[in-house]
Image 1: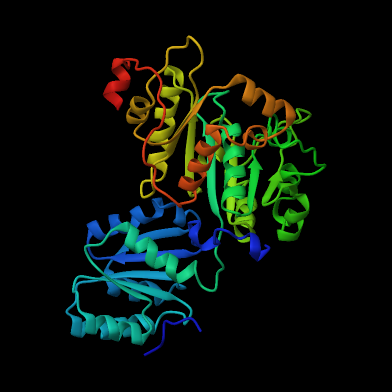
Image 2: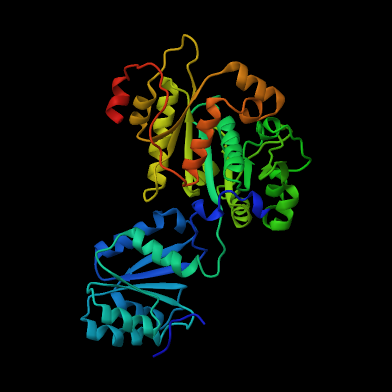
Length: 425
């Protein structure tokens, strides 16, 4: 039978890198064709493309099972991966697959979807060169994981975890939270972080870290396909131990309009070299923001405890969940709690309404945050013993997969929610 097989300073590493959850391994740009015998199986395979790991994959489904695949590839080239469903008895499956092997390229991979849970059949198929045998009924997650194991992990090094912070409303403080959480991860876990300031016109990462580098993320975007790891390293500026920045130009001498996947290459290059990538995503809604939120490992919505933020956070959360149906829901941070005389929505009620996990509550302290912003410092540098530093550290632990959120902490006053939001929640 023709085979289907394809021929830092150690003293400061208080927390091993392995304890930080790795980023999802994206399947590279491959072509997959599936031949199904039942419509339910075709729907199952098609649902796999909604997984963000499959964002680069071109997948099509056809009828006919193994026989349909054989007839197709007698006159057509084979794709990178073929998925075939079979309802044949176990003793007939190897012979049917041998006919398929005769019309396939040697480098083509094959995943078989079968209806019989037979370990002897599984072993025989694997010995013959079949990449995987999945017993139906199965989930799209199982299929995606099998594909990922075949294509994304071959000799690949660990990749960095991508964490995006986005404000529910302008001025909610998403950038401040992102920068201070990055500081907490770098100082508490001794892990290298890079902060990508994606707000080209008004980004603040340079100001908040008191940096004014001559180059930054805009240069990487202008270079487009020419950017590589060496160039990206030159464009980064070092803000502190374990913290690197890709700053935004923060100028308005041109407009900053991007294609949907414009930032994709930069993020992937960062993932190959740095354990934690913090994305400071501007409060905007366009194709590239939408795509970025759908493809990163963790999304954190930062909101103030008022009605406009609640509405926007709910819209954001619902949209992100729809974009990432197989992924964890966004997390929520309530910022600027306790502003004098402002009626506030209770944090627990807020989180319940938007159906997100509440991983942090940050009180409003005008003097502390104003001093840090004006001095270009992090909160921990201005007041290391302040309780908010512990909140940032807890958020950092949560988004890096180090711990589970145990509750809300301090909460504001309770406000009755409007009827339309209660219904949506």
